[in-house]
Length: 140
Image (cartoon, rainbow, N blue to C red; front, side, top):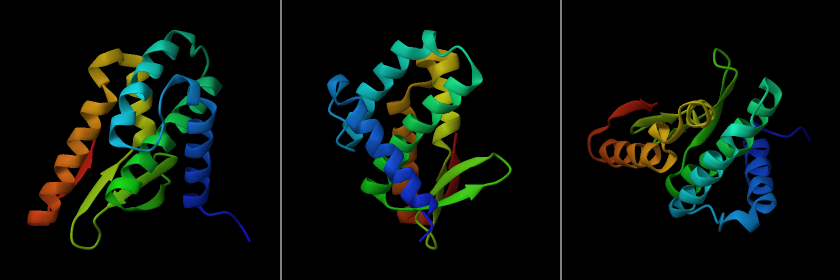
C-alpha cells in the first residue's frame, strides 16, 4: 500500500521529535514550538546549501504541521505551485491554511522576526475566528 502525504508528514515529524529529544520536549504541544524555534536559531548559521535548507525546512515544517493537526485538526494537501504540503484546518465550515516549510525557511533567513511561536499564535487565533464566523485565511 503506498504511503500517503499524511503518513509522510507524520513520519517525518515523529523522526524530528525523536532525533532532537535531547534538545527539548518535542511532545507535539503548542509549547514545544519554543524549543523548536530556539533550535532553528542555533542552526541557522550552519545551513549552508539548498539541500541542507530543504531538509531542515521539511523536518521542522512537518513537526509544526503535526503540532497544528494534533491540536486543531485539519487535512494535508499537496500544493503543486509551491512544491510543498499545506495543512488546511476547519473545512468545510471554515478554512485556515498554513505553509510551514515557508515559515521555517523565513525563520532561518530572517531570524527572530519570523518567530515560530508568534506565527503559530496567529494560526490559533485564525482557527478560533473561523469557528465563530466561517473565516477563511492563509497564515503567512
